[in-house]
Length: 486
Image (tube, rainbow, N blue to C red; front, side, top):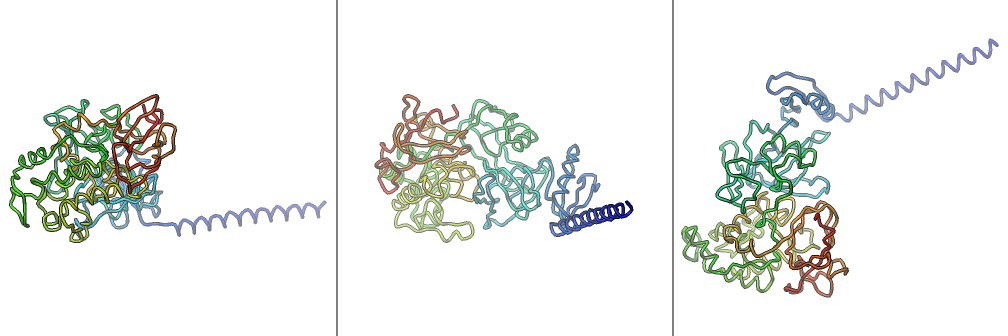
């Protein structure tokens, strides 16, 4: 009995030693793991009262502490360099670089690369900071994306100016913050104001689709991916920003000269620099109309882009290079701009090579829709670093149009709740597709038995997309009404 009892005691001792050794090993592994995963020094403190709540070597722990103190909106997290990397109710300042430098980002959910230039639009909405403290999730010009913390600054929106919308004389105006220090804004009339927006009211929106009168409610809705507190019950899509290039304008050459005359231009420019009253676009509207006849690309939309990109047709590149659209005039090297033999050549190359072969080609990596759009969809996604390039082009289109295209061109624009196929015919073959969550816009031409006939984004030949073919009025596609959010 004694021998058996001693054996039992030895086994118990061994078990205790093994257990304690395992605990020690786990502790050592955990300690080493924590040490090797340290990613900086982060201090949680009240920025108003300057009261500290702890310092951590892992951002995730600092983040947990900050969120445990959510009742105090003055809580921030700073890193070892004193830079604020997380806070409540914040604005992302993108105007932290030279005008020649763009800021890269990665789109949330798709990991697609994107870029913008903060000199053309300063503020985005702060959503959250990544768990390693290295990136910030923001929304700006419709896109929700991650940007390096080193490329931006964070400010409380109560302490920092913001872009905003308002209604004036029936027009929707976007006041875009360019420089917070000097309170410099650029104001754009981008289209007719929707009925749910009223004059003498300031509205906030970072996608141009959902509008708020309270920044806290906007921030909460974006964080939770809802629109419960928005002024509008359905997403708003501005016609001039979302009409596809595959549409025919109702304007003629005289409308273009009439607009130029309204801004003081009354003669054709022949040399750079030109007089304020001169432009290479004056008396040249017929070029755009002729190219529309050749390519089925909306002439007024091209004219609007030319106005925006060439400074009303008065830029050096427009006059000396015949480059109306800023082709290859990169922010880092604008003198890289393409040269063309003539304005005719430039407009045709823009319609055929840049649009039909690229930005309006569903099989091209640059394609996000042939409308002007913003940084979430449309040509603006990759064509320009200016996050509001799409709105600026839309603003020129709105000024040119005087309601002509608005009243005649019918479009369907939605953010998809389901995947969507475009077919060559009813119950036919798939021409191209969109995914759930994409914003789509089509020129609508007819409907029958649960199907919509639309203008295809690219030429159709033998039941397939063929970008080398001539686009005609018969380049149509078909979508099932049941695939839309109706």
